[in-house]
Length: 208
Image (tube, rainbow, N blue to C red):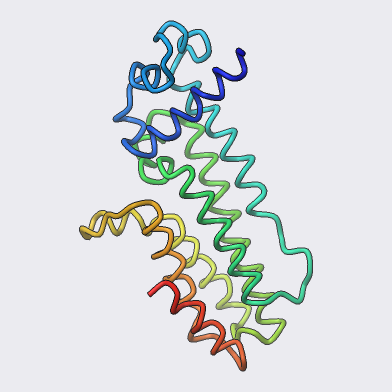
């Protein structure tokens, strides 16, 4: 039962953090959501920092699965598309980390370290996919350009929602993920080669 209550607290915390932000969520609100007393919550997590740490552990475990290199060298646009959706499912599930990055980093030093490693790993994964797609003749991208484009794709994936908020386009997590997917696929269209051109255009059209 202890483990069950702990998991319920973590799930409730993640949902509330995603909806209202970590700074905008109190431990009393989390306790109310789980239908336990504040004292019971304190028994499992004495400080809010422990809640954030536990969620970071969960994020790292899920992120590790996303950042697994492709198993074969001859990959397709569909393989990249699957990777992209796994990535966006992960970032949407932990939306609060990216939305409140500066505030969280000031309060919890580990947040910056964990997200810094994730961002670095994500750029490397994008570069790996781009290089392999180029090697398979799907894309026409030089090795020098692959690193630059990969960084740009990582920025789009991680920070598009914040840009949308600044420009008055704040939407739901699902809408944001669809917009990111479309933006990333559109960014690859100028580099498509041969039959991949039509297929990439077809995939991109789903997000317009």
